[in-house]
Image: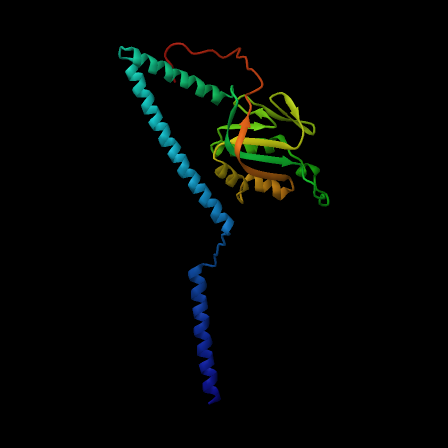
Length: 245
């Protein structure tokens, strides 16, 4: 009777072992935990991409409308001429906004970056806790990647000609020197920009992990001034004639 119980126990244990081995083989030992915050960030990113598609569709419709106005302008008539002039005026105003020549306002985000205040680890470089020019550039790049329409740093409008560089413990922007903290404002899809910065792989999260102070806030009313510097183009001229590749 005792031997029989031993054999039964052996068979049961063998069956359980085989079952566990099969289960581990099926799962391949890989389990991925996704936090609720990560899921919410992905939802925000998806919704932002949908909004971006709507904007692109609106741009297509706007371009088609402009094409129609240009075609109407080719036809004789006072009304078509007025429509053509209004279209050109709208184009000039739009390019003024895009080039930073006028003050703009809208919804977006406000990012505040400052030097860290925690104690240094043994042998740690103090530069790990300081805000550098590259940190500001990386944040601006992330904002632009998410569709920022206008960006400023400590009141300085960021344009294609903006230079950002370290100057000791300060940062030089458009030729002006600024000290910490750095306040970066961007007009655009605030939820999309904020989600990208605070994403687990976002640059804002990386700064916080290093010990740098980082904060991002959604804003409904952001004002960004016009660029403070007038650029003089001495070497660049309009190309005349046919453009050849």
